[in-house]
Image (tube, rainbow, N blue to C red):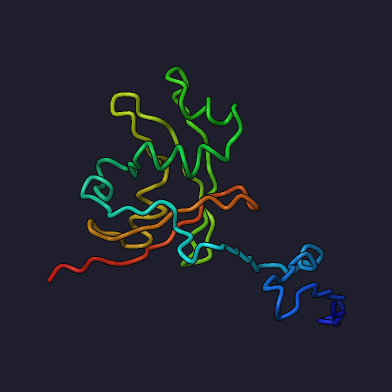
Length: 166
């Protein structure tokens, strides 16, 4: 076990070469404004991937539709019963406001997640076009990725690949 000093903070490493484990517990007490660290065992953290459709980026529709199975497994799973009810209740026309962090630009946005009972799908509404389609110049065919950050209790967004018409 080694004890080292970094920037005035004491760090204790419990790992040796043979253990293959590195403790990051010392990072809990380090406050660094404007930084975020996301660690994952899976090198591909983007649990929900979607090729945007024409209807996802059309100005007149102003929503991002996501498959119900992906939302249930990778977003709803992390929410409280009350939050899930706000999203799924047919009588609640409001949905649930969710913070969405744009990992490409480092900006934070608010979208509303709700269930469309006619299709069983989930949609992000309220600012989708303005905050993402227009601001990021998204087009049909772009591949986007989303994952829920349990530590920050928010969704992360990224444009994984842009589709360019030739």
